[in-house]
Length: 263
Image 1 (cartoon, rainbow, N blue to C red):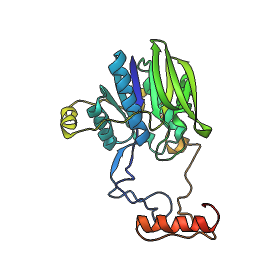
Image 2 (image 1 turned 30 degrees about the horizontal axis):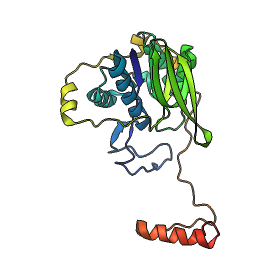
Image 3 (image 1 turned 180 degrees about the vertical axis):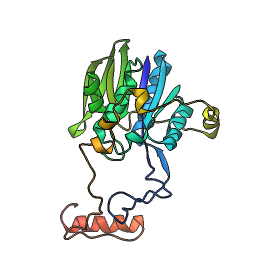
């Protein structure tokens, strides 16, 4: 089975204190530590596990600048077979539809049985997987938290739905799945694995390589534009609890008891 996983380089929230810049147009990006998007990392792990069971290849692809290559190498160190970087100045500022259009052009150059994305990334829109499936005219399932290979043409997938319920579906391949966190436990990537893939050539495809009209992607073509970033003001009546974790827990329990929330 040949699997393509779409990944993204994002600020690592565990390593950074995220702040809005002075103009409110973006977050402060100077000196940020970046890593692969958490949801995408689960998708790559799942792809590797499927390949190890049934055979095939795992290819990781990302849209970004030269620095985005680092997340491809990380996922190759994790176990992916190939990496592809889609990079062009024309891609900068693309909205979800633009990113899906770029990925579609790359996917149509190959032949994949399964295309996977993370459920969402740093923008939280959760759009690209569904848009990509629609553009490719392929079956799609979102919030996938279990995958079983039935045969070389069909999968059984579980989806996390409201109320903590699980929905099971059979889906024909080729298809697109957006993967939820918790579907597996992504493996540790050691320095030895990173060194092993450090010299592997990763192809870089531009707009012209993909046959994309530069005017149909990027900031100028974006239908969704970011207008403002801000930290919401504390709501009326909000109270911030201070102290150690134990002290905050104790205060919270007493407050809930006082308001009838706990007995």
